Image (cartoon, rainbow, N blue to C red; front, top):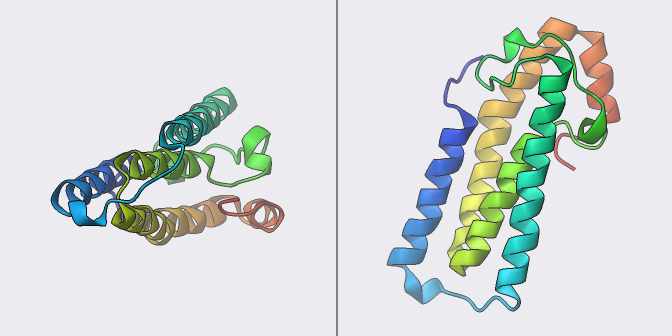
Length: 150
C-alpha cells in the first residue's frame, strides 16, 4: 500500500483536532438536545461495529493489519460485511461523531468530514487496489454487491 499511517492514528489526530476546536473556539458551541443519549447510542454503535467486525476477521483467520492489507488471506463477506465493506472504519467514524456531539461544537463536524475523506482517499482506495490485485474478480464482485460505507 502507498500510505503507512494506521487508521487508529488518523482517528486519534481527528479526536485531538475536535478537542482543540471545542477548547479554543468556544463561540462555535451549539446546543445539542438529548446530547448524552445521542453520545451513548452513537458511540456504543461505533464500538460494537468495530469489535464485531474485528472478530469476524479473526474468525476468518485473516489479517487485521490496515497497513499490511496485502497479507489478507481471504475476503470476509459475512456478517456485517454483507452490508458494508468497511465496518471498522464506520465504527471509528461513529465514535468520532459521538465525540463531536459530546463536545457540542458546531465546527467539530468538520473533523468527521475530514476523517471520512482521509480514510476514503488514503486508506480505503489503496486497500481496494491491493485487494483487487490479490483477489481479482472475486473482490470486484464483492465491491459490486456491497457498498463501501453503508
